[in-house]
Length: 326
Image (cartoon, rainbow, N blue to C red; front, side, top):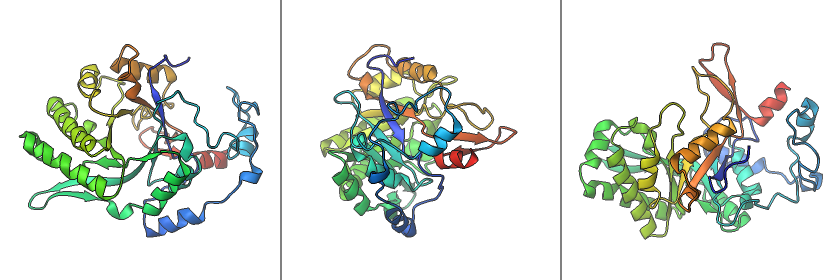
């Protein structure tokens, strides 16, 4: 099934090329640079379609022999409509994503390293943690490799209690203070904006107040030329984020990172997200094609899950892990 015209713009999780699961450290930063190698002479010019590798019934030998052979002609091209956003996450549990981001930088408009946490401590105030993980050398490398690519780190409101949220929600001044603090820190580290992950933390409560906070953040970031992308849950059984929430926020944020990569979960094992369900999640937020609907970024998981026999636990399955099992 083809996605409806104007429904979504794609973003990709940069976790496909390695089975590594680790957090960033000084050592990791050195390792990821040393692992890069130039294999351009070994790469075919033909695309996977031209090599007839795209099929509903692949052979295991084709996967093993070709999983690392991307087209040298398509490495630096982005096959998307004009103005489309393509966001890629670089995650701490797969450090090879740093190399992938540099190799394919021109395929993305935005890259989001999972680095930062906005915390709130009584008696101390707001703090931006995770800044020790920022690798400005890597940021410069990605910007040089990608024409106009923007670096927008994922920011999590970590450790916030319900009382913390309620105190911030109590006044516009408190929300503005949080927004200005975030904008100042992003400017300090020369980022282009942020990807905010907060909506699911409140379990569907205080949506109106949370909307005001997101608007305050968007206003503060836009005032200094930065962008705000909001992570939102996908609708599987009910929804924490619906059409009314989308309508209120779409004019203010620059994009919505729709979590359609979280279809199966421990206790509910199953496949990666079906395309029909993914399309339904996007259309459910905005029924008609419009410029605002173009802000929805459809989450594609370039990985799978290996569930235990009980279905109560799982491990992410990357391409190298899958190849080893084959």
